[in-house]
Structures are given as structure tokens and as C-alpha cells.
Length: 422
Ligand SMILES: Cc1cc2nc3c(=O)[nH]c(=O)nc-3n(C[C@H](O)[C@H](O)[C@H](O)COP(=O)(O)OP(=O)(O)OC[C@H]3O[C@@H](n4cnc5c(N)ncnc54)[C@H](O)[C@@H]3O)c2cc1C
Image (cartoon, rainbow, N blue to C red; front, side, top):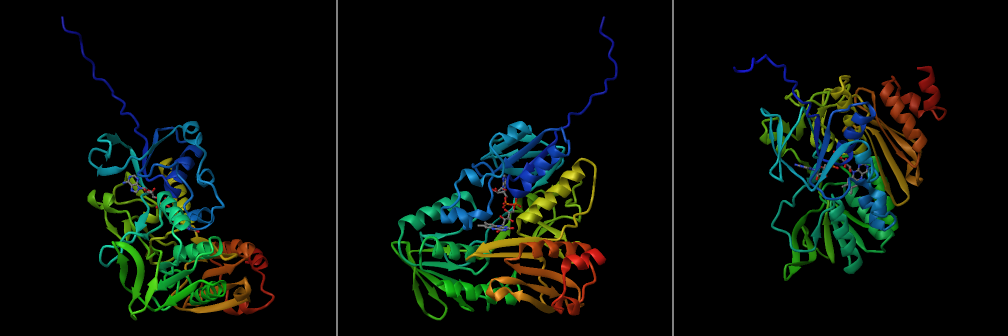
């Protein structure tokens, strides 16, 4: 006699969270999930083969030879086992299959997820001209830094850096100051850091680099690369000048790694589109860090930020949402850079137009630029060797206090006192 069958309630397994990208955003998200008591499986996929590492030192202390590879690690080797986080190094996510809630991996496997977090970051913007000869480098990854360090140690002669953004400037400072190399920066825009810093900070940094001995040429482009046997020998500028180069570093910005999302039908523009909760239009998929394009709190603009703090803050926002505490991402953006003995910190986003109040003597290595937008609202504060003031600046911006230009101009203005009374 056949056995009686009873309707069975099958409990679907919780496949947990899969995080694509194991850098500042991805690892912060995994560790915050565990810190908040999330006990479902967590898998983090990394296209790179190194233990996840701090990226900012690559152009600074690591390039100078002052930091060991071990000290770059974001977390110790035991952290992942201890926290029961499956870290898969050298494994790339190739396709997101949204219907099936699966990610197809470079190993051929299909990995199930309940929640997917895309933290794929960015990659260097490709050179827009002809194919480049050998000896032309970019810096994004640990592997790039290793190649560059080897190049610096084995190839004497002048170095040309194309692009006067933060990475180019930091590299120039390190290679000149710590490796005693002759460095020229070529910047097509009328000033260095035109995209991210105020004209005041650009001018200050330009002066400091020039005094230190770094050559900077602004408002001029690169026409072509000079080479012999397909190995770089120089750079021809648009005015016809040829600069000799032992090797060249291109630092002309980055582009978001968004193809995976776009191919899965998720909206992308300058990054993967997310809302204020870092959610894509698929309720099970989030995007965080350098790869996402998000609405900036208290403004009507969307931005894609390239800084560690934003990657960390968005990771925390998403970890909270996954455990059921959905809160909008409201953090004030901030960024730092270290070069030529200057600690540069920016809180907020520098407005394109408005008024700037200078406090202290930033040009002499200690002071600040307070930037007000055209409506008279405090929008950003750039500090030079004033870490305490930077912390206060973040609090001022977070509190959205109505501070006036006159108040900041007053020599007796004290941000802490102001915060206490407002
Ligand atoms: C040289 C340098 C210096 C910097 N200095 C500073 C600084 O001083 N201050 C500051 O705030 N910021 C700095 N930054 C920027 C900062 O490093 C980035 O904002 C930060 O790394 C962003 O983190 P992320 O996790 O969003 O992305 P990323 O760090 O770009 O990491 C994304 C990871 O995802 C992986 N990935 C991509 N696609 C896939 C896939 N399909 N499958 C699996 N893995 C994938 C990538 O290989 C990468 O490892 C610097 C950057 C560089 C390169």
C-alpha cells in the first residue's frame, strides 16, 4: 500500500548576502553585518588575489617604501574565518541572474543569494588616444603599485605624470621627495584638481609642488607618445614640446565598474543608479562605494563619490537595511590627502560658484577655506594641517547650521562654541 503523503512546508534556505567586490565598501559591509548580529551566510567575491587592502597608501607610504604589504591589509587574515565570512579571492562575478537570484562566477558556479551588494568600484579611465607603448602605467590596484615600484627602482630618468588629480599629485610628491626623481605633471585643465578642489587649494598645492621641485604644466595636452621599439621615450605636448620620459603614469580619472549591473538590466549612468537607501530598482540588490550614483542628502543633485569615507558610510547604510533597520544615507562626504607634509582634508562638496572665506594661513601650511554657495549656505570646508578643525567642520555641515560669511570672517569665530549655542 502506498504511503500517505502529507503536504510539507518546505523552508527555503536563507542564502544570505553575496557581496561583489572586496575593498573598502565590500569588506566594511560584511564586517558591519556581522557586528550587527547578522547570522546568515556572507560571501565576498574579489577579482583581485590579495587579501583586501587599503588603497590610499598605494600612492603615498607604500610607494615611498614606508609601509609593508602586510600593513596594507584591511583586516587580519584570521578575521574572515573568525567572522564566518567566505572570502573568495581571484573569483569574478560574471553575470547577475536576477530572476534566479544567482550570480554566475568565473569558476563556472552559480551562487545563490537572498541579498546582493554590488561594490565593484572603479578602474582607471583608458587613454583616449592611440594604443600606448610599453612603459605607460596607471595606478589603481596593489598589482599596479608593485609594477610601478619595480619600475621606479629599475628605470632611471625623468618621469612624466599625465593628470593633475589627487593620485597624480600624490605620486609626484612621493616619487620626487622619497625617490629623488625628476617629475613633470601635465594637466590639460587650466588648474590642477579642477574637478575636486577649490581654486584656492589648487593654487596652494601648485605652489607647494613647485617649491618642492615638481614641475607642473597646466592648460596643455598630450599630442602623442614618443617611443623606440615600442618602449616609451617621451611625451609630445600639444605645443610641440617633447618631454623625455623613462616612463609615464596616466592619472586621468576613473570610470565606474557598472557593466555587471547594466547587463542585468539595472539603470546606470555615471555609476549604478541607487536611491537614498543605496537600493537599485531591484529590491534585493544594493550598490555602494565608488561604483554608485546616489542622491546627495539635503540637495537635489546626484553624485558618484570616490573616497573611502563614502564607501564605509554607504556600507553601513546597507548593512543596517539588510538587518531590517532601513535608514537613508545622510553622511557628510569628506576626503583626505597627504602630500609634501600637508594634511589636506575636505568636508562637504566644494561648490562651483560662491564665496570663500580664508581662515589662518593655509598658504603657509596651516589654515582653512570656508566655501559658501551662491545662496550663502556653508557647503564645504577645506583644511590644511588642521585635523581638529576638520572634525568640527564635519559637525557644522552635519548639523546644517545657518552660519553666515560674516560670522566666519570674525577672527574670534570658534566653531565649537558656535555648535554648542546653535
Ligand atoms: C592610489 C590611490 C590613492 C587614493 N587615496 C585616497 C585618499 O587619500 N583618500 C580617500 O578617501 N580615497 C582615496 N582613494 C580612493 C579610494 O581608494 C576609493 O574611494 C575606495 O577604494 C573605494 O572603495 P570601493 O570598495 O568602492 O571600490 P574599489 O576600492 O575600487 O574596489 C572594488 C573592488 O571590486 C573588485 N571587482 C570589480 N568587479 C568585480 C567583479 N565583477 N567580481 C569580483 N570583484 C570585482 C575590484 O577588483 C576591486 O577590488 C585613493 C585611490 C587610489 C587608487
